[in-house]
Structure formats: C-alpha cells, structure tokens
Image (cartoon, rainbow, N blue to C red):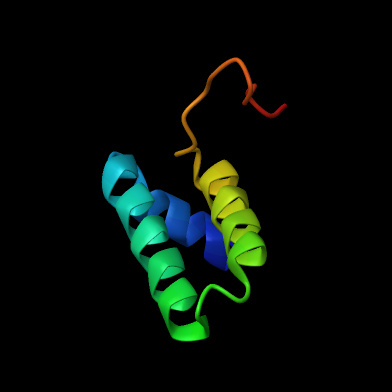
Length: 65
C-alpha cells in the first residue's frame, strides 16, 4: 500500500476538510512567497484535488478518466 493510498483512506468521507486544507496550504505558500509562484501553487492545488477527488466538476472542468 502506497503512502497516497493511506492518505486517501484517511480522507475518505472528509473531502470537504481535505479541500479546505489544500486551500489553506496554498494560501500559506502564496503569502510566504509574495505570490511569486502563484500559478505553480494553483497547479499543485489542482493536482491534489484531482488526486483526492475533491475538485468540483463543471462545464469548464470535466471529470478526469
């Protein structure tokens, strides 16, 4: 069992809290770097949301296969 599988298991049923944590972590990094790496941080947040299944789905954000 990989590390990511363990994290996913712990977060099962708590997707809203995981999403808040991803937001807070990204905001902290943006604050500490003066928004210098904002686009990279946003990309990282999106990848984490995809990995944990917390990204909201919409017309401009289709579900990943």
